Image (cartoon, rainbow, N blue to C red; front, side, top):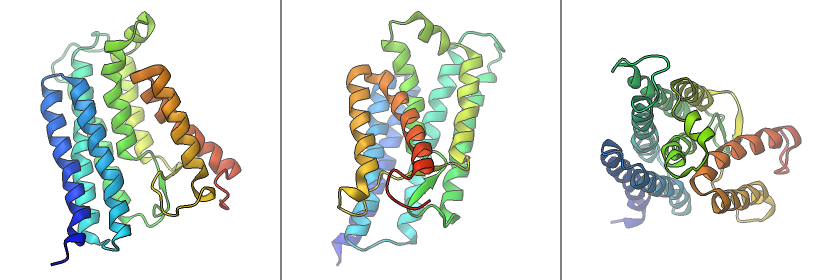
Length: 240
């Protein structure tokens, strides 16, 4: 029995398991614990493909499992978080109990992206549109920014139905936008081939260190910004 071929799929299932646990804590509005399990799930999601390539056991089953696991951890969970944010927000647009369900537009956008990713042959070396894990971290960080921020402006901003609805709509859009974004997955172990990824990771560490949870959305914004700059000036040394 070849144990190695089962390791990547096991790691993928751990991603799904973390997403399920995160759902439980979101339902209790314990967003910090939910954030931790989503982050852990994304950690597993990062390494399942790495080990699949390392052990040369890539296949269709792993691809489908990966998308199904991401659908929970990076699709359903952020939509559920936005549901609670809208439910707890100021009633500027509607006080209807149906209104918060619009938060699941994020889930719909994530589902479409994951399905399209599996059939899009252009996304083998990089991404087109924001990856669902990045979008999930962005959304999961919002209630934590509210909890730990001392800024009245930030608190007012993230408690506004208009702002939350705008974030929801933009989230669904950026997931499927025709914007090339670089991949963080390491495929060649050379400094030159990973320069852009190293710069981004260093910047991410600094942002999170200085701004804590507020640094997470800044990291995602930086990721998109660096990708746009890279597309324009080819910072990774590849011809665009």
